[in-house]
Length: 135
Image (cartoon, rainbow, N blue to C red; front, side, top):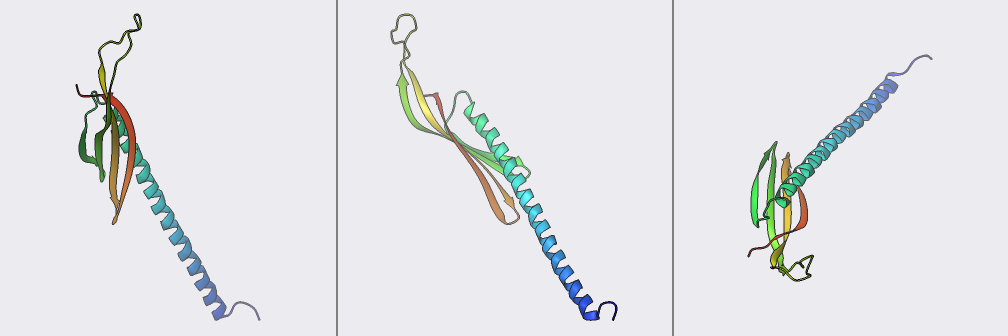
């Protein structure tokens, strides 16, 4: 007997359809993971930028700020004092203490948040920075 029976052909088509369904699902899942990774990369870049702007503000000021970066990304910056002290630098020539300077250690936090469909995502970066204290 030559050729395939109708049952063999139907079974082959069912197996092929299942395999294509699995491949399609894997492809869609991979694309979604790539898109999510891209959003995280973009959020980290935005958070680093906001953190750098906050840290390099002169003088460093305690406070809480927030806004929108566009493309569905929202940012928040918090600068909070952790500890304060006063230092008296030594004069290089006479080794005598000159006038004192107040210094404050600040906690600086940056958050970037966005929504991906129904899921909310957030990136949080933290650093500490020494700034001039209040006199």
